[in-house]
Amino acid sequence: MKKFYAVLMTTILLGLMGFVLVGGFFKYKNSVRAGQEKPVTSKHLQQLTYTRDGIKFVNHEPAEKVDSLPSVEKTAIQKQLDKNKFSGTCLLVKNGKIIYLQAFGNANNTTGKLNQINSVYPINSIQKGLTAYLIMQLIQEHRLNFTDKIGKFYPKIPGGQTVTIRDMLNMCSGYQLPKQMNYLASDEGVLKYNLSHLKYSSQQLGKFNYQEVNYTLLAGVVTKLTGTSYEKLIKQKIIDKLNLTNTGFMCLNNPQQPIGYNFNNNQWQAQKIKQYEISREFGASNIYMSVWDLYQSLAALRNGTLLSSQSKAELYQTTSKDPYVAGMYPLTQFNRIHGIGFGFESSVAMSSSGQDAVVLLTNHWNSKAAIQTTLTSQLYQIINPA
Image (cartoon, rainbow, N blue to C red; front, side, top):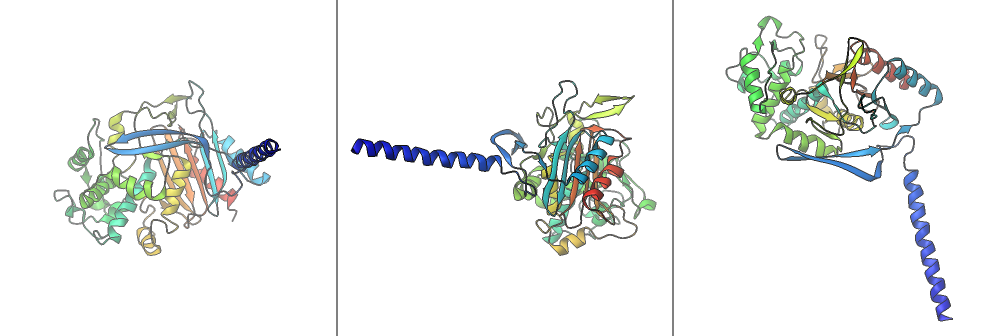
């Protein structure tokens, strides 16, 4: 009899364990729901780990697709993506929750490898908004002012006693860099090249002229005042603070990064990125992200996570003569944030609260596709009808 009860109890315990395990499995399988807060990563998580300037970066893949759009909106979204032959990853966010997350096209046209929803892409000039945030942090700490003259940090720079930090944030400093450097250099070397080759026009001071040299010099200001490398500041102040899992600095042969293509002579041509082309983009255009990490970082600048309401108002203060402010273009319906380079294009439409957004990252850049001027706006209007 004792043996019978022992067998019976063992059977019951095994049954309960099986119930818990099966229940957990189905709970996991059903964990991706409409309106989830973030992509749910796979249990079999793969990691890419690398070190840059002594700083460790870890990227993860993959995540689950999301599609909770009503059929009418879904059809309209798909029509616009197909019309523009979009290749990349598309993220739509409504009220702070993902309603659509899908990947399209090839990461590699030769092998047929597909883009994934957690593929990482160079965000290009959208990075300038992150540099602007580092500047704003110093202002919040009373270590810097918008009205400080740039000559305070670069004594020999032309116009140094006139051009302000605000002028540079808004691309109306009068500076330009006629020729980019074509050799590999450290961040300090990039700064030295920019300072020795830039041109200054006092007649252009106060007038918008998009020039990357502004943000390279601003990144230099940040490193001078903090005594910390730009890479480490981005890691500490943004990546770690927001728990970003697919963000880092561009490097050659990143297996998670698709190949970038430009459309020339009626065909797609793979872009061969050189290391010096990456290094010279110091502070301006050498970070990569997934669509979800990009959304989180930009939303955090707008929803109070990284900036207080007062700091946000000060950083993004606009006037009628400023079409560009601290890394973005403020429009009536949304903020437009954009970048192009290396065969990639990044385009974002985001509400001023950061709650609603369209995030498009593509590895097939076509100057005639009008992603930033038309597609992003159309998708935003579909999920946010006037």
